[in-house]
Image (cartoon, rainbow, N blue to C red; front, side):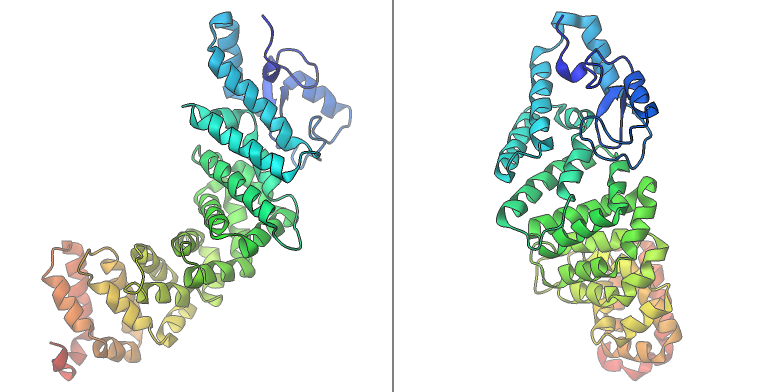
Length: 392
């Protein structure tokens, strides 16, 4: 049988017996790449990129495919082989330094069309090393300005990357720990389209969700320019506010990121998002509320909330919502935190109608636990109960 070229080691040009993948996403036969490295070479033979990490990861998916092919022979699904072969050829175009940006955009469109037709499309892309390649292409350099062609390519590449993120393999994202890559990420975030910003927010979510990328998550949390950009995204970018809320919430899951988020205006941004819910159709106010509650473990966050002109009002707005009770418990717990130590906050809450909202909540179909929290808050505010009868 003729050996499919994507089953052949790029070094020996023989059938791969023990496939291993380098950090560049290229796969080789173990014995061949070990000889290459032992000879003192510090680059990837195919891409000639310097190896930041020389470790090798077994490519079990490719091993399984080769074993299947050896067992089944001519009966191996020819359509699947043809798809893999086509993808391998398209990958070479993306790797080429000579291909134009327009040609690479067409190539990404062809890749998307090929893989959408196949149930195993995402896994095929992953086993062929598209994930690290696409990340490299996305974050390889910083331009003075984002051209229309570069924006189009970034949108298409991000679309493929986000599909591959669904496989849950996040190790490759650690390339963003390199300053040049992170600088490129920031550039795309600052100058990119709304679609690009949403895609990068999803990458931030993925980074924040994995132990493999914990250090990178902490690095992002120290990037004050990025944090400020996320908060601005919540304020001003139509169609991307929700993505910004999710990214902020994800970053705040790491305790070390919270102080910087507060310092860059995170509390004010989240409060504004909640306060403006009537003017815009938004459905992530409960997530924003839960993030505020998380941040209120910091004194700086409490101070920021009390000093925000609409801070207490935004919390009260979340106490009782006619459509649903999501976020009510977080709002009540947040008010408890603020009102316990601040007479000013208690007076402002009562003046803004919190008692009425709590009584409405107690008459609703919310959970027993939420009602218990509501009664505790009423008890806390009891010393001021008779001072505002007009609210009852």
